[in-house]
Every structure is written in C-alpha cells, then in structure tokens.
Length: 377
Ligand SMILES: Nc1ncnc2c1ncn2[C@@H]1O[C@H](COP(=O)(O)OP(=O)(O)OP(=O)(O)O)[C@@H](O)[C@H]1O
Image (cartoon, rainbow, N blue to C red; front, side):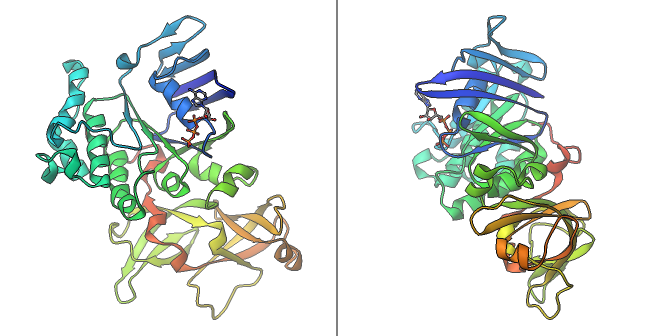
C-alpha cells in the first residue's frame, strides 16, 4: 500500500495531491503539466516537498511534520524514464547488473537469467547501447531497474519516445512484467491505451491536484471528468473471456456481458483466458430496438445508467451491461430523437474492427494481482 500526500510549490505551480493505492500498477494520468512527474519525484526522493506524508507498506519515507526524509538511495525505489539513460560505455549485461550494487545482498531478489528471459533480451547481452533500437534500450532499462530489487518501480512515460511499432512491441513485455513480478509500479502516462491495458488503479491529475482515483474500469467509466475524457480516447474497460478462435475469418469470439463479441484474432491469448477490452465511446452506436442485418458483428444489450453533460453537439452515455459499464459517444440530437433517458433499454452496436489488438490486455491485473502467477523476482 502506498500513501501519498504532497504539497509543494515549483515556481508558480502548486502541487497539492493525495492518493493511496494498493494496486499492482497504479497509473498517474493527466495532461502535460498537470504535475505527474513532480509527484513521482516526491515519491522517489528526487525533490524534497515542503509539506508531505509518504509511506510505502507502512514505512514512512517522508513526514515533514516529524522531520522524516529518507534519502533517495535508501528508499529502494527504481526509475524507468522516457529515455533509457543506459551507460554508453557498458555492455547490456553490465548495465543490467549495475543496479545490483546499490542493494544490500540480503534484500536482493531476481536473477539476471530470469529478468533476461522475461524481457526477451538474451541476444543483446554483449552489445553496447548505441547498437540497440529504442524499444530494446527501454527493455534493458526496465531490466536494470528490476535487478535493483526495488520495493517500488516508477515508470515515467516509459514509451513516450517510441514510435507506434516500438510501443506495440514493448507493451506485451510490460504486461508480462506486471503479471509475473510482485513489484508494485507507478506508471506515469498520458496515453489512455497504455492505462487501459496496464493499470489496475488510476489516479487522474489536473493542475497539480488529484481529480479522481479508483479502479481503472470505474474511473474510466465516469462521465464527470471533462479534462480526462476530452483528452483521451474516452472509453470503457471491460473484462471478457475468450470462447474460441475462428481461423477461417481471422476472428476471436469473446464472452462479454452475457453476449458474444467478435474481434480481430487475439493470437497471444488461449481459449478460456480472461482479457480486458478497451471499447472506445466513439466506436459504439446505440439503437432502441434489436438491430438486424448490420455489418457490425457485435450487439450488446444494456440499460442507460447515466447521460453525461452536454459538450457542444456531443453527449456521452454510460450503459450498464450485466454489471459492466460501456460508454457511447453520440450526438445530443440522437439523445433527443431516440428519447434516451436513464433506465432506457438500448442495444450497443460495436464495430469489430474498432477493437484493434492495441485495445486488449491480459485481465489478471484487474484483480489486484490476485490471480497472477507470481515468480519471485
Ligand atoms: N523546478 C521547477 N521550477 C519551476 N516550475 C517547475 C519545476 N518543475 C516543474 N515545474 C512546473 O510544474 C508543472 C508540472 O510539471 P510536471 O513535469 O510535474 O508535469 P507533468 O504532468 O509530468 O507534465 P509532462 O506530462 O509534460 O511531463 C509545470 O507547469 C512545470 O513547468
């Protein structure tokens, strides 16, 4: 459990943020300049806040009232930054082992071989950083951070400097990392796709304050967070189970909200696996009757739980589909012409191609790691 309460002034910027989380992966999400980096820097000990109380699993790291400030090298908090910051004169292997020196032997966990296998970097060990791609460098930086045996991993926009192809390459490694290790992580991002795939707990920041916090699926389904939903590809995160793969059409069939959902084939997931799905609000249409003869393959029945505030011509609608939330972004005109109100039964039509592979992740992190297969690294 991490507990954070920080007040600090940086020039004209006021940071005044509190949150607590016992999640495996806690995302700090917000616009550029909302204070995410400043907040993690207070947690990692890179800045000394004017007024703060920060504790990790009951151990106080900062308590300005009691004049406690644990030095950063004693916190066992490891960082992964946007740029990998590897030592150019050391090989990958030497870079990986570097972090170990700073951890007392009794507190070390995780073996080089395990971390190398987890991140798929065995073939890179003798290379120098200049001979690595951006994605490979980041995987090495993650490995180095893990081998420092941290109690907390801070990842500050770890994918921000990578192009889309490199991001897609590294995301499965991050999922594996979060599923298979026990190290709690604070993940700073302004990408909703990353947050939807990776985080079980979401902290939304705006102008130095915490705007919302809670389980990712709950926070993402809220309609009262304008800076959040405008900024992102607004949508809901749902949990589904893989029923079968249909090779003839290159599709996978999911069980979701008591219905079947057809999506592009999910090669990495086996039948029976639980996956999380990010369904963007703009990919959902609503009908008040069961639609017929549509090219869209997916129709989910639900009840309107909330109609969000008017934003120009747009309104976001939250549906309750067998206990899971789905968001639909439709026009104000449609809300009026279909006489949509809370309690109306509707049919959500979702285009299968709207659900690209980027919108899927392994589901286990939703359960706060309870059903993860943890290996002791
Ligand atoms: N040392 C400093 N002195 C003065 N102002 C600062 C200092 N460090 C940060 N700030 C200001 O504090 C605000 C928050 O910055 P911070 O880097 O924490 O935001 P962020 O949400 O991480 O942004 P980004 O996503 O762009 O990295 C910004 O307005 C920034 O200019």
